[in-house]
Image 1 (cartoon, rainbow, N blue to C red):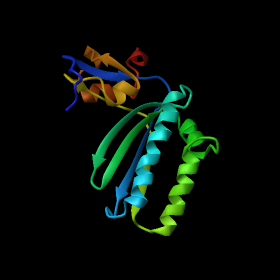
Image 2 (cartoon, helix red, strand yellow):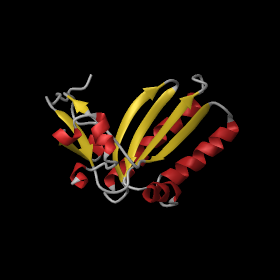
Image 3 (tube, helix red, strand yellow):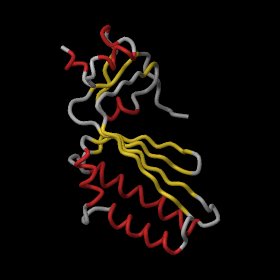
Image 4 (cartoon, rainbow, N blue to C red):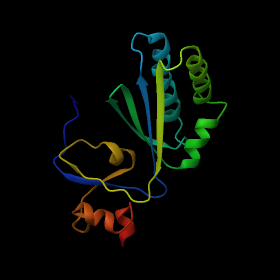
Length: 167
């Protein structure tokens, strides 16, 4: 249970520029092999710390959930280019973690799996009613729902993610 109090309101999000949603998850296939999955699980913390300490990294928000089989992270990024730059940089935490995962996977195939999905978002719609600011609104900007954006259909119809851009 979250200790953050809900805000009595109806809000949506707004943002300018590119929006990338990156889902990454881990599936524990052999619970009895923590020597294989625990290092994978533990590698994410240092990466997230590194990303959030760097205001130019491109990550703007994060949501952590537990899915069937393991954790799932929803990450919000300002650009696909910044996401790819982080993933491929030899000077940051991801590359060594990826190499370690591959070595471990060869020594005990199938003990732990990882997956990711990347979405470059052209249109985004959101609604938050009487909840703390979270998700996309926390990663971008939370704004009150105005009369021209009262329904999901209205928020998507203009094809813009920023209410200010709708004129």
